[in-house]
Every structure is written in structure tokens, then in C-alpha cells.
Image (cartoon, rainbow, N blue to C red):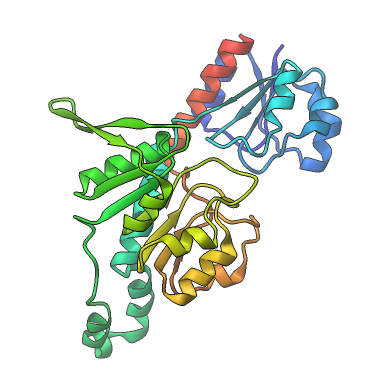
Length: 314
């Protein structure tokens, strides 16, 4: 019987699909340090971001046939090495696109309308300071007509562009590997395709009022001090991509200098222990890496993973 270890969880619907295909599904999490002694008992492992599947683990498990990653990034897996050993490496790049894009805009709306700060102060101030509190948050910003710069023109980047266009924003984009994408707006009754051609990163940085980054995990940051310096004064910067793609020291410097009006940050260099000076910064809207954490996205992740595993091992 095919045995599958689901080490970081999967939606019940995905589990049922695998079991209906005749697979044995083990949902008991095995600690990272114990995997090297136990993973060879399984034909496949399903992970999210917590479990790492590196070369030493792959070498210790010759019976392993599939490594399945629930989500987009594969930076916690030695992908090329696994494939060189004949192991299939799969993920679910489309499942969470909408959810991540919505979180990017949740940060943006929270920033431009002071939602988090106002919510925190309301119970403290009470009725006596209501008008003063109202006055202190009277300088909100409408995003219609503002320029949204999207770095990364993949599925999540395109979902972010779609929302920006739908909200009346001007949208520009950059990706070193993509020249143009068509963004479909509308519904089943009326649809229109809006082409978005890439511009240079330098041009994007200089003209965008809001910048949202959507690139895979990288070995080096692509947004450093020079990139922040090239941005417009008062830009809003959103990172719902991966920790490590942005130089956090440079971002803090830009926040402190006023170059960045505010930042929305869902991902950090040192997860699960992000630096306190970012979390406590008054100009930062932060969340604990929840871009894909919606019921709908997790349902899609589970079913997509199960379908791919069944096709490979069924």
C-alpha cells in the first residue's frame, strides 16, 4: 500500500481524496530531527513551510517518490537534487493567488485608513475623546488613481494587478522573465482583457505610489538601500512574498527617514522569530505569514495536492 506522510497538515477533503484512492495517510507530525530515521517508511511526504526536505534527508530515504509542497514557494526543499534522484517535486502555485493578493490589499487599506491604529485607540479613548480621535485620523488616502507597482508578474502578481485595476489604480509591473500579461476583468457575462507590459524596475520604483512584491524565495534580497532610495517619497511598500527578498535593515532605514510612508509585512527573514523593531514599528502593518491562510485557499491546496499525488502514485 502507498503510504503518505502529511507532516504539516492538509484539508480534510484532500485527505479523503487520497484515502479514496487507496492510500494510507499519516497525519501525525514527525519532528524535523526525527524525519531522517522515519521518512523512508513512506512513499510521499506533504509539507508546507515548516518542514525542510534537504539533501541529507533525501539521501536517507531512497523509498521516497514524491515531495509535495502545499503552497507556492519551494525554498524549503532541495528541488533539483530531489529530481536528480528521480523524486517528483510538486506544489500548488495557483491555489493561494487570490488569498495572498487580498492580504496585500488588506494591508494597503489598513495603512491608508489607519484601521489598526484607530481600532486600538477606540476603547482607550472612549466617548470623551471621540472627536479628537476622529480628527487625528482625518487624513486618509483614496487609492483610486494611484499607481500600483507590482514586482513579479506570476500568478499572485497578476491577481494583485487585477485587484488594483478593479479599484481604479494605474498598474505597472516588472519581472525579469515575463514581458507582458493579460489581466481579465469582469464576470461570466462581461469580460475584458487588459494587457500589462513590463517596465524597468528603475521606472517602476520611481513612479509607483504603492509597491507590492510577489517573487519566490531568493538567496539575496532584490530590494536593498539603492532600490528604496529610488522610490518616490511617501511610497507604501507591501511584502507578502518571502522573507529574504527585502533587506530589512534598508526597509527600516527608509521607514525611519520618511522615504516610506508605511509598510505592510507578512513575511520575515527570521521566521518564526521576526525582529521586534519591525513588529513594533509605528509605520508597519504586520501579519504572521498568513497570505495563503484562508479556508478557500486551503481547500484548493488540499485538492490540488491530492489530485497530483494520485496521478503520480495511483
